Image (tube, rainbow, N blue to C red; front, top):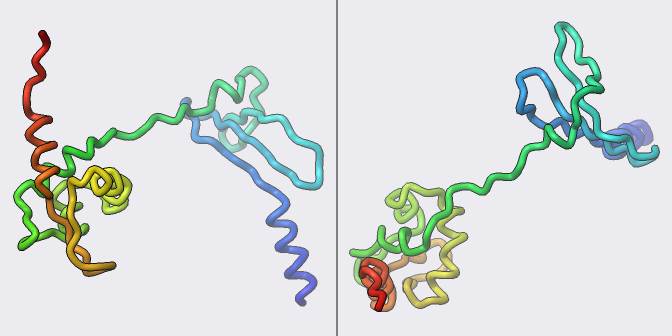
Length: 151
């Protein structure tokens, strides 16, 4: 029984098919990675009821999606959400994320920049840690709001 399980796992791990979502309604780009065989060129299949048929006319490279970066978030915009926090009334990451209308993971991505710049202070440790805006953070927000003067 153990041998058959090992063979089945080998079968599963030695094959990889990537089917990319189509920009067209019925066409799909397929890439196959087969560990024990020579590489297979990417190809396009098209849904023609009731079958998927290979379409030689479409180029699979043109069907690939371009990675579009998500909405860029300015750390100062996140900082503005805790503008009224103090060391006496700090916020948890969860409260801050809800108030900023972002995921906690997004907040954690930007937190090192804010801590390194000295904009955010921390009270407590680990899961009980709470954040508050520092004087440097308040100054950064004021500087952001000032119109730039060009001479």
